[in-house]
Image (cartoon, rainbow, N blue to C red; front, side):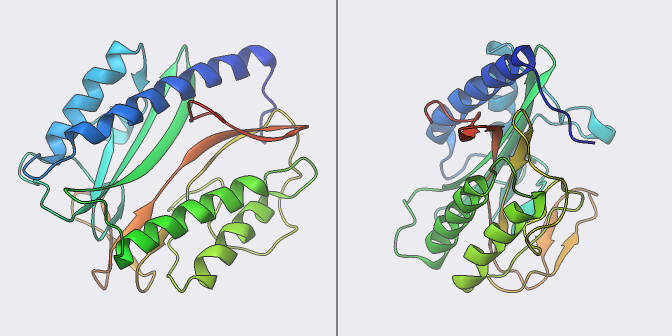
Length: 242
């Protein structure tokens, strides 16, 4: 069952989303060569508390961190580690899910270390991931089906020649046929998160039980926003300005 949010719930989600988005606007300043993924997570943990947010990953099924920090061939759920230090040209994906007054916002972004990443295949992959995200959001219209979002994401990714990777247990897959699943209605909220791979989409989970990596060592991109479906079209909740 998909819950239709009332105005009070939506307002709390909007607040959570804006606060998380504000955190992401500042996080780029600490992503530099020599910084460990654990240090990034520690910064996020502190900033969440400063903003009155509560991490929804910390304590979930024994997970001990306030974010997931995935590097290069790690697709998603990278576990922060004191010994994993960023190097020049790395591609870092940071994923944060946090709540404000009990209502959650989920967001993920890609960052290049030490360079803007322009002209590289990795940069192109991140660009495609963002295009796929917008395609999925644009398909989140009242009257459409849930799988229309998945189909829109898949069309962008495969058209650009990249692999596709799916979350292990998603509400919305990153692939599928259109016209299937529940009908979308105003008041529904979703986290849409394209995860695409540079080469093949085969992945495996590391011994830590969390980190998902590509089998062929190809790099991966991951972006995510939380959105609200309205009668006037989809609205981003995890952006400072729509």
